[in-house]
Length: 75
Figure 1: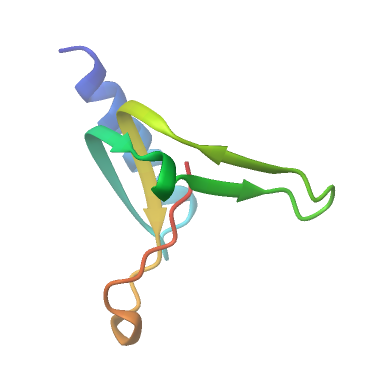
Figure 2: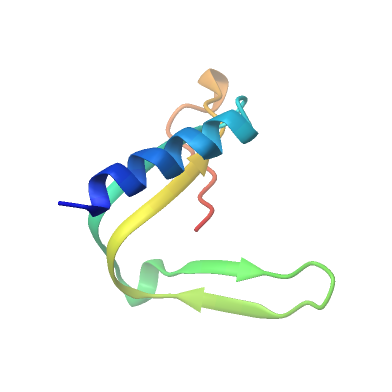
């Protein structure tokens, strides 16, 4: 599949840009309406909630051992 090398190259670029954050690529995610991902623009206050099916999700997070089980998700 041609998408796999593209996603791996994207992961490499993201890790090089911000090495303190880790990157994971998740295939075939469903975001339920009750578990939607809320995004807010701090400057305008505009809020958006993402729900539905995702073919591929690129998730960037900071691994903090003292906060095991929590992740910062940026789509």
